[in-house]
Image 1 (tube, helix red, strand yellow):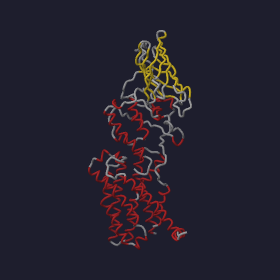
Image 2: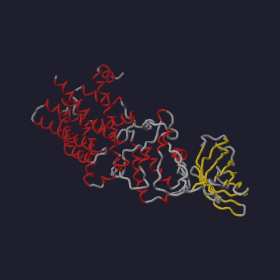
Image 3: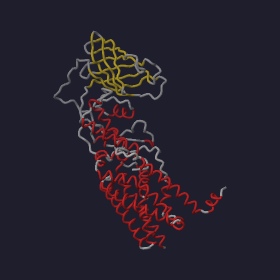
Image 4: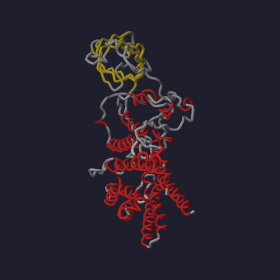
Amino acid sequence: MKRFIFPILLLFLFSCGGEQQNTQTTETKEQAPKEEIAAPTPPSPETPPTMDHNPLGMYVGAFEASKYGAGNAPSYSNLINISINRIEDEIVYGHSVVAGNIRPFEGSVKKVGDTNYMVEAKEPGDDRYDGSFKFSIILGTEASINGTWTANDTKLAVSERKYNLKKRQYDYDPELNLPVSVTYDGLYDTWSGDEAETLTSSVTEINASKAVLKKEDVENLYKADLEFIRNTVYARHGYSFKNRRVRYVFDNHVEWYIPVSTDIRDLLTDVEKENIELIKRYEEHAEEYYDSFGR
Amino acid sequence: MSALTQKFLRNPSLLWSGVILLAYAYFCYLMLDISLQYIPFDTDVAFLRIKQDYIGLEHYKLAFFTHVYTSFFCLLAGFTQFSPFVRKKLPSLHRSGGWLYAVSILFLAAPSGFIIGIYANGGLPSQIAFCLLALLWIWTTGKAIWEIKQKNFQAHRFWMIRSFALTMSAITLRAWKYIIVALFHPRPMDAYMIVAWLGWVLNLLIAEYIIYRLKK
């Protein structure tokens, strides 16, 4: 009977505490990223470029750190949406959306020549991350905004940022999905060896905005994939993410993404609500049980 | 040094028994912990969070909770049965423990295991694995009881070794899952399917090896 010891001992060797950190890694990158990124589509010959004479609208692009204060863990680059909402008697009214933060601004605007506007505007100043903008709006076939932002508090992790934004239009489109390029990069803060965590192509194949998903569609997915399939629903509605891990992917890899709002709950369709509910179940289950002793 | 400690240190087999007992107690505790997630009765916690398609079915619900609430008793009762000390000095404990073990498996844990096996995660391969496990569990346990009724002690012993190897799959399949996930990070349902088989087939092979050695 003493030989029966063996299987039990084997088990004992692999003591199952359950609390160890096992970040899931996924398949290694198989293709070189650059080859897969679709070339920008050339403008179709039927529609000749038209001049945009309207300075109002959304301007979107990278909001890049250019001066650092003393604070910790700066975000070097976030996607910002600067919206010019109204111009009246040389006063400009607008707001910016970046990293889960919406702030209004107001200031002076001067028309320079036919196509340029110079803007100097301030955020209200009651938020510790407020500051002032200085930019020019350049109209043309491709309208853009170009300028700097300076924090009121020079001790912030980033005290000055620069940006060169393109005018874009936001439309909700349930067909949009993550590009395959999101699977080439490690997720935020998981770049080093053991922690390496990447998305798989599942995130490009499953769309939680189009049709009601069944449990068979989601039960075999990794937690990170589930997390991004769900967040892509929010992204389609223009949700601006505070969470760095999510933001990093959308800000850097998703061309169609525009941060528009910080509360999109009322915009979710019934299909999306149902799918989110389902995905969250599996996400929570994976979080709690994937790498622990149990089922 | 106390007399008990000295006794342990002089007798390696006693030391081993202590180690096994501790390991087994630890895993039983983990199993109990899993069962306790469902107390108080709740159909939307833990594993059931991803079983919402089926938990509405009355027979599934009945089978699931029967399984969760009884399996711990099989593990506990089963373990006492292999101790030569209990067998020789406390035959009545051996008999009542055996009765608890057999009844809880034959009438509760195994039939309920079969029913939830039909709805197992991981597709057809998992479903076959769990249903087959339940049938073999009933067969080996039933056979062991039948043999002792015939006073075939040797055959009783061998069938109980097989039965208990299958009972142990509750622990081994969860341990394998932990190991496989830590090493290979498979997709969740792939892991599920692998351990559905690995969890008891390997145990049964080890049981056969033990029986083979005992026969020699």
